[in-house]
Length: 252
Image 1 (cartoon, rainbow, N blue to C red):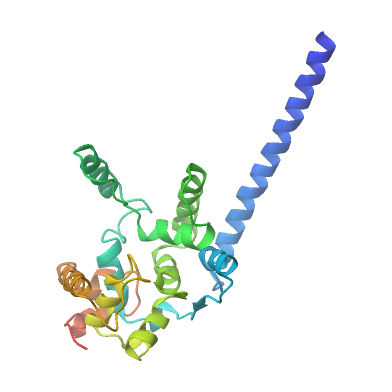
Image 2: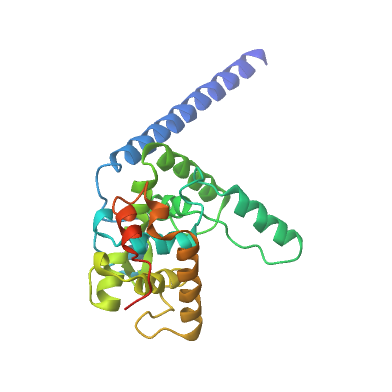
């Protein structure tokens, strides 16, 4: 009996060591990939690859460096999606607590994902809901905050946020919606693109509904309340100059 127990214990120890080695290798690989993407611009996101496999149709994205994105476009997505983006460490605890309190008061549980969390799951993970995915999302959020910084995170978001059917990134949204580059967008156009982000396959910026126009006006107010592009002066290189030039004035 002791011999059998010793053999069984030995197998369990070997299994634990093997699992730990696999886990350690996976963690190191994830760190290496995130660190590499600090400098390399990925051609695809995990969401795009999953859609390609599921739909059998090409997914479209055109990379644009953040310096070539209008500061009002960067500000619009922050105003719409994550106003505390320059200040939190990847997780907006204030919004999380507010969402939980509202849910306890009877409201439907709403999401409180930051731009960092959205980048982590869209770039690295599959679509779906599970505790495993949420745990990996948290891990990758910590990694990109630590290894990239806010500027690179925002650049990735601007390039891989879904902006239409099989279309990703603000460059294509600007071209297809307004016939111009992401750098030439007005504040009103940027706010309209940002307004469609919650459901970009249903909202059409070329023929905006009343609801979309209402959300656009709300985003424009938030952009002004945040202080204009200067709010992102430490993140978007051209933001400070844009703020002094008054580019948050609606137009176009």
